[in-house]
Length: 632
Image (cartoon, rainbow, N blue to C red; front, side, top):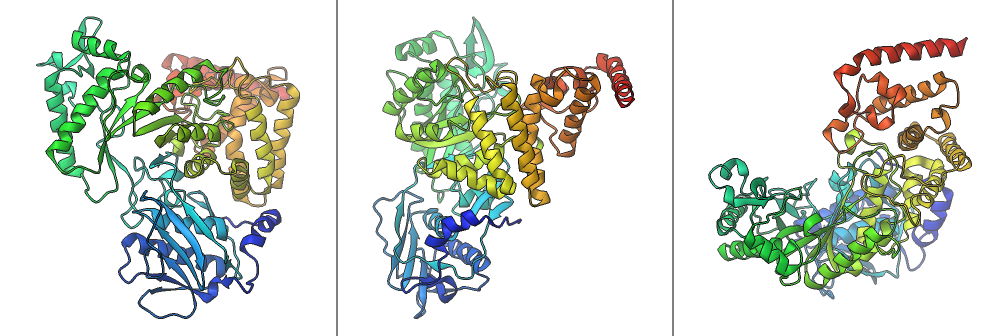
């Protein structure tokens, strides 16, 4: 594990007076304290105590002891979990809730459920000890042998959401996820000691026809099980009013639960969700039910309610919820059916603009979504959101949605949303080029508290990752946010790099170039410089796409050809071998014609055709000729 130590004097001053002051009469040095756990401590309380010891030892250079509450101690006690010192009462029983409280000669950290005490320990380490988990390999652990426990703490916390999940590289790391309060388990697996996570059993999306009632098994003999589309049966969706389908899917879900259900988990989810296409069933029964509800969600919610009832009646599955989508053709809420209490509806924002906030009255795409959000919030007790923080098509390009991240998550909370999945660049190992990891950190913190100091969190991340140059990159991000949209232009999930920044004048572009150069000049370590160079790929991508600065055609051909070649080589050297979500968006290895002469979007294997080989050889020769011509 790599530790990034906070060295900025300003940050130390910010934290120092409240946290790192010399021990006063009403404060106790950590090195003079012990950690106390119950003699019969739960595995999660024990884990929380061990993590607290690890980080406090790293900060102070000491070796703080862990004792159980049956041992008599006269020194200051940091009580972790349900000890004899801690009060057991909480205002609510929400899993993940905690309190941090100072008492005479003791500090109490105690929580509810599988995650409460762990959340409390990491909150104490972050807020009062200066630790931060910015990425899986970038953890700030200050060095301070004089660290003290404040004497006036009285903090309580209840999670804003029961389910939180992001999906880039860092969010798959258990320590990052636990420290930043992520509870979802699609892309990671937390141990029982870490509090576990909320698992989707058997897949988290698009399960109908892909997992349940597969056309490869049933279509040939029973085409009536599948959607009637334009007068013909297709194996692309199910006929949700068919009684046999209800029995088949119920039995397949029960078989899944027989294999994977964990009765001790706080919650597990079974996804019963439409396939990823728009071919819903138009048979008489489905059509009548949809028309009665004003939405195709009529058949979907009726169907999922029935599956949930049948499965729940067949066994002890009180901790199982059944998830479905409000997605594309099912996005509008039905008028005559409501989801059961154990049915989760995940409202998907795929059609939205991600440059304007969702409550912007001048953005028609978002106005429509807000209407759906309001209607679902009125009828659904377990409303979740599938939100998007990326450009699926050109993922290495700048996706300047920084200005909406906080307000949108606030909107979700204010509309009674219980869970959020923020889809990011889940294939980031091959596509780590933009600010995707920063967005992962920021949305994780926002899901912990939508009303935090967003600007401070972003600057803290940038300082830790990029070093002193982070202040320049923060200014760059602010410029990108300013130019992300206009009243009449929007930022969609697949907005082209030629249309995702507006009113970028030559002077603004030159200013941005200077900010990147200043950031690189300010780097204090090779690691910081490497991080800056990697993130700069998104800016270079945008300039290449739009023919700006070093990629401008208004200069000697060798210069812009060389700039494109350098960008290509840097992609390869930094391991950025995939340009977007689709498999055929992998970086082409030998398409010189596209690399030198065509839009950067064509650098992917989708455009790597055999008939281009003669042009590729010719392009290489032209480049060599231009190089010689320029040098002369």
